[in-house]
Length: 63
Image (cartoon, rainbow, N blue to C red):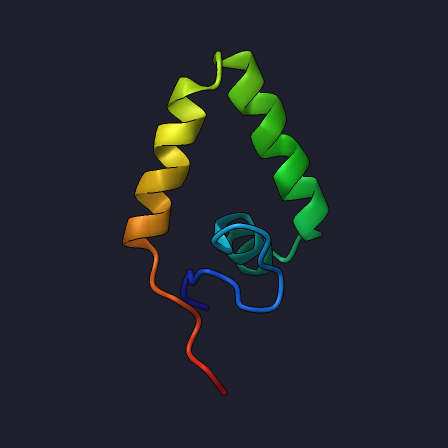
């Protein structure tokens, strides 16, 4: 299964939702993990990583 930005689990850009679908996890768990890791790394690297993934990950194809 390819990695796409989610259309159905989208809060901002669908990045965390897409990662959750790809891993088969609950999107809330991925979002909480992202926030915790971003805070632990003083937020800057997490923000940059999210923006890069937003630009690089393709949108999920419409069915």
